[in-house]
Each structure stands twice: as structure tokens, then as C-alpha cells.
Length: 304
Image 1 (cartoon, one colour):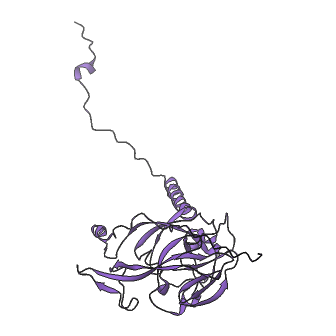
Image 2: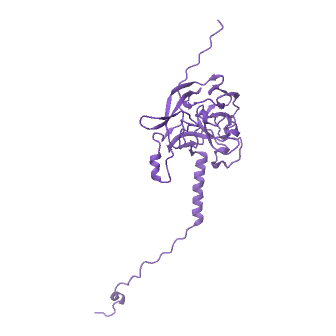
Image 3: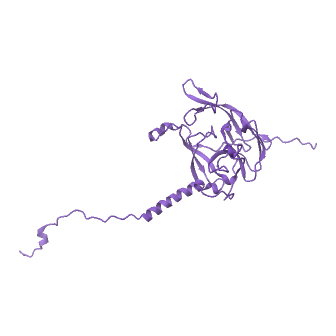
């Protein structure tokens, strides 16, 4: 038997002293910050060029839009201008890229001439139209826009739609079930292209009458659906209105649909949000339905 056996075979395996320490990778802050900036740039670009969320803060578009509604506004239907950029960081100019004219009945976002706020209103007159108001009814190119009386609309009273007696006198009604509602008198208005929607006009006030004006080129005339509680193209800027027809360069997009709506009872606790959701308003389209218009009667032939 040989005696030069390897000592390493006799001593057995070496004892482990624990896992080897791996060096920590250093954070490349330049790469991280660049990634965050690119992500932020992509969000701002989408917000400016494609679509953005919008929150309804006022009752000027009731009953079609309620305080607490969250919408999606598309930015491209009418082209792009200074108003398209997020937070209105660009200077006011009259240029437009791929500019198009809205259609009758479109709900659009517009900026007044004296401040950087987003208003949401409906297009009721296009460039070249003559428009007047008589006792709340639109007279478009010399013809009254049809207004059909519809049954009162029952709108649930909640913190975002309080139906205050000051604004809506005698319209609060307690139903036999105990539910408190606002019974709103509504009219169905139909524009020349057949776009139809309901409006509220429950009292006579100063903006119900307006002498005829002609909408200038590249402008539109905008009104809120809640005719007695809307500062729009009928109202001067010192009344927080739009001061007349709005340049198309100041129109920043078209309202497409409601994503969800909250009634104002929500708190910071996320568990309260579910109960605050208004039922039946999610994914509700804001494009007005279009009805067929009767063909105009031809004038009698006087040549015979």
C-alpha cells in the first residue's frame, strides 16, 4: 500500500465560510432619470395630441353633463393649435395644423379670450351663420331651431347636483318613496344637421334674447345646454363668458364619452368611491344622435 496518498483526500472537504459576498450594482441615475423623462414626455405628448381626461366642475351643461362626470376629450378632430398643448404653455396664436370645422351639436372644449381656463360647451352655429335668440329660442339663419317640449327629467339630488332653491325654484320634489329629485323642464332641440339633444330653459333671464350677429370665418358660436346657468358665447368676458363667437384656434378638442361619474359623497377613503358612483353614466357617449330632417318645402313655381 502506497504512502503518498494526497493529503487533501484524507482531510475531507473544506469547510464553507458562508456565501461569497457579491458586489452591489450601482444605480445609474442618469439612465433612471432619462427613462422617467421619456415616460413623462410620452404622457404629455398623448395628452396634447391624442386625448386627455376632463372633469366637469359646473352645471352649465346639465342635464347632459353633471358635476362629477369624468370624460375623455379627443384632441385631434379639429386639428391642433396653441390650445392643444398641455397646461396651455404655448403663446396664443391663430395658427392651426390640419384644421377642421366642428359639426352642429358637437360638445367641445374652448378657452375664453381673457384667461387660460377650459370651458365645455355645445356648437350651435358655424362660420358664416347668422344667429339670434328670442325668448330663449335660437334663430339660425332666419329660422327658429325646433324645440319640442318633453316630459320633465327627474334628476337625483346629491352633493354634486343639489338643485338649490336659489337656482331652481320650486323644482325640488320629494317622491312617495322618500327620494329627493329635481324635476327639470326640458326641451329637445334639433339643429340643421339633425343633431338632437335636450336643454334646460326654466326661467326668463337676460341671455334669453340676443340681436342677430354673423359668426365670423374660422369661429363658432357655443352655448351651454343649461341655458339659464351658462356663461357662454352669449355672455361678455367680464361676466365670465366667452365674449361672442370663439376662434377655432381656441377650441381644444371634442368630448367623446363619460368614463364614470361621482355624486360628491366620496371621501379620501377609497372604500367610499364605489357607493359614490352614479349608476348608468359610465361609458356614455357624448356624440348627439342625428335624426332625419324633413325636406324643405319647395317654393311654388310662379312662372305659370
